[in-house]
Amino acid sequence: MAAQKKEDTLRQPPETQKKQVPLRLSAKLYNAIAAWAEDDFRSVNGQIEYLLTECVKQRKKNGGYVSTELDKPFDLDFLAEK
Image (cartoon, rainbow, N blue to C red):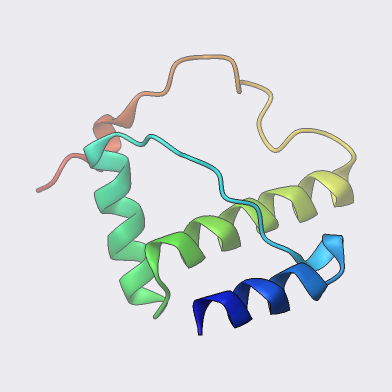
């Protein structure tokens, strides 16, 4: 059964195949995304994909970066649990 799924994936056009990307997140950020995903009835992976897709759409629409401060370190204190 797994071999059939792999074959089906390989038959898909390259633009529709999904890439696997290892991603490291802080526990605070992960927990915030997980809670948001639950609110939106998505998996954490689905939520991250959704958020990245929205950022890319916004960048294409505006012709620039979503944030002009991307290189600055993140302050995640706003994610502190209450």
